Image (cartoon, rainbow, N blue to C red; front, side, top):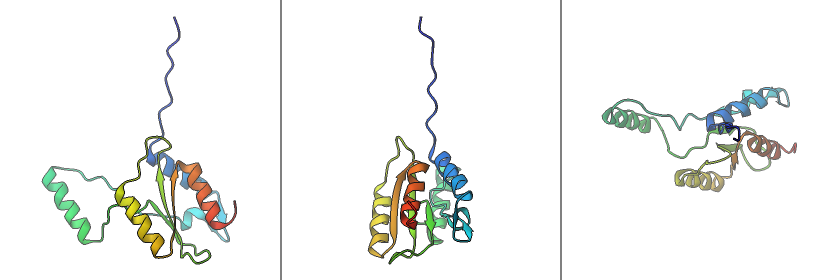
Length: 135
């Protein structure tokens, strides 16, 4: 009889984001820690309650500027002609880029921003380092 082996659970997108921020808290850009400059955009929030309550919450959020597809992080450091880097993090496996995210990426690039979609925190770290010219 072969022993039963458990597979390690796949890290969630939240796990990947937390790992990125842990790295960013240990990494400096000029006089700042990257964690002080990397801004999380809480646009992928989960709504709770009844369908009616969720619809009311979404309508309120849209009035305040909610836009589906906005990336997870903004790094507001100008480099070259880009005013900053928009960064979307997906799970290493099973992460799917939505049409709203593809549209957001195209819009930001048309406006001159740098953008990156990374699978996992290590790829996100590499995208940041590449953007900052330290890779």
